[in-house]
Amino acid sequence: MKTIIITGTSSGLGKAFFDLLTTRNFCTIICFSRRFLSYQLEIANYNSNVHLVEIDLNDIAANLEIVEKRLVDSGLLSVAGHVIFINNASTIEPIDKIGSFNVQVVSRSINVNFLAPILLTNLLTAQHELLNYKLTILNISSGAASRPIDGWGMYCSTKAATKMFFDVLIKQYINNPNISIKSIDPGVLDTPMQETIRSSECQQFLLKDYFNKLKEVGELKRPEQAAADVLMDLGL
Ligand SMILES: NC(=O)c1ccc[n+]([C@@H]2O[C@H](COP(=O)([O-])OP(=O)(O)OC[C@H]3O[C@@H](n4cnc5c(N)ncnc54)[C@H](OP(=O)(O)O)[C@@H]3O)[C@@H](O)[C@H]2O)c1
Image (cartoon, rainbow, N blue to C red; front, side):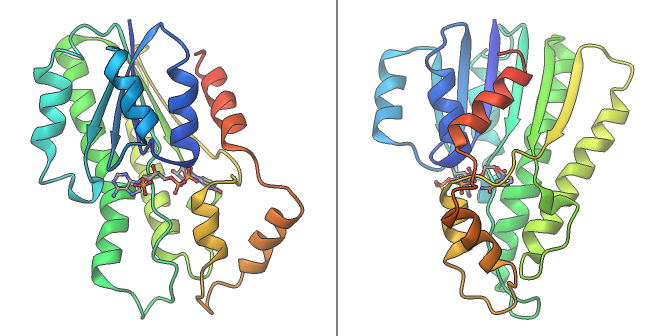
């Protein structure tokens, strides 16, 4: 049995993963999100393969017990032959000039984009060593992980740090055929994250016109398509 763990399923790409995966009945899905849409709650009510865990990833360190309860104590991992973790949740904020950062927004960026994937991965790899399930990790990265963008100091640096974390993990398990880890850039997507980008008033964010133009000329990729591509790549 495949168990798929996804973070951030309330909008954009994560919601598209949820929609596609809940139409398939070969897997258990565990979603970690700070909110769920009403139809997602309904699906979880009648589909016992769908587990929704409400958690603010900004508080991941303090709430690690909830995560352990839902993954480990519930027995969901011990019955899994193959665990697939899609690290999707992210925040683009703050879009701001370095020097004008707000401390809370900076720590939220670090917690959601960097700390949460580290702690979830730490738990899943520890459990892998005990239970020996096959483990696949897909990190949804971004072009911004390798390209500095004015005004995106936190997003670029947290996405870069997260990618490096997973690159180190690739090295750790290089000789283990039971674990595979990959980072992918899904392309520029037509999601609420892009709405936040287009509505930014930060003067330092010089690429805003570029992103406005992508929307205007219809060059943003549909999250449904991006999710389908990713799942196909994972053989799902
Ligand atoms: N959009 C793009 O152009 C683009 C390009 C390259 C890479 N990506 C990557 O693709 C992934 C998905 O992005 P998206 O465009 O779908 O973004 P999105 O529409 O903003 O969705 C982000 C998801 O993360 C969740 N999230 C944010 N903060 C959270 C928190 N504190 N606790 C729990 N969940 C939280 C959001 O929940 P709420 O709904 O509650 O906020 C939402 O479900 C991200 O990793 C992003 O870096 C996006």
